[in-house]
Image 1 (cartoon, rainbow, N blue to C red):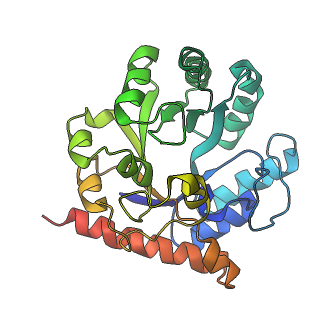
Image 2: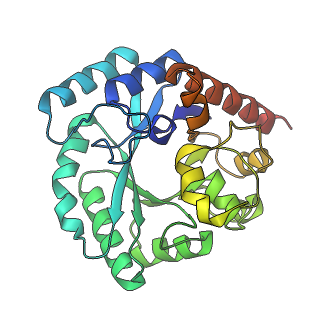
Length: 273
C-alpha cells in the first residue's frame, strides 16, 4: 500500500507547499482541491488552480521534480440548486494537472436530484478518463455503505468507484466484514485516520472531521481489519487534521510526519499474517 497525504490534513495549504510536505515525508501521492476553501483554520493565503495558469505550471513542475502525483482531487460537491454542468471547466484543469481521480459528494437532501447530479459528474469524469469515487459519510446525503453502493449501482458507469474514509465508515456502523464482501475492484481509495469508534458528540462531528482527528493507531478504530479487507495496491492517504498541534506551534511538516509514521505502522500490522 502506498501512503499518501490528504488535503484536509493541512487544510487551506497551497499546492506547492502540499507537495513539499508530502515529498519530505517520502510520500508519492497527495490529494488537493482546486481552490482554497473559505474555511481556512490555519490562515493560508488564497490560491486558485482554476484561475492561476502560472500556479498550474508551477504545480506540474513541482509534481515532476518531487516525484509526487495527485491521487485525488476533492471538492466535486452537489448542493441544493447547484448544476453539475458548471463544473465542466474544472475538468480541463484536472487534465492539465494529470489528475486521474476525483471524489464526488452531495449535501443536497433531495436524493433523486442528488443521484442525477452525481451521475452528471461521473459522466463528465469518464469523458476525461478520470475515475470518480464516492464515500459513506454521516454528514452527507448518502450516509452508509449500503446507500453509496445503491448510488454506484444506479449510475452504472465503470469509472464510478468507492472511497473508504475509515472515520466515516466506522461511525456509520459499517465494518471491515462489509468491505470484504464487496468486489475488491470496487474499492479504489482509502482515507486513513483514527479516533473513538463511537461518536462522542454528534453535534460536533463536522468540527472533529475537519479539525481534530487522531493519528492512525492512536484511537480504537479497527484500522488493521479495514486495511486487510481492501486490495494491497491502493493509495492509503492520511486524513489527519490536528488543529490543537498547529495551535501549539507544531509545524505542518512535523504534523504530516507524525500522521504518516502512524499510517505506516498500521499498514505494517495489517500486512502481518
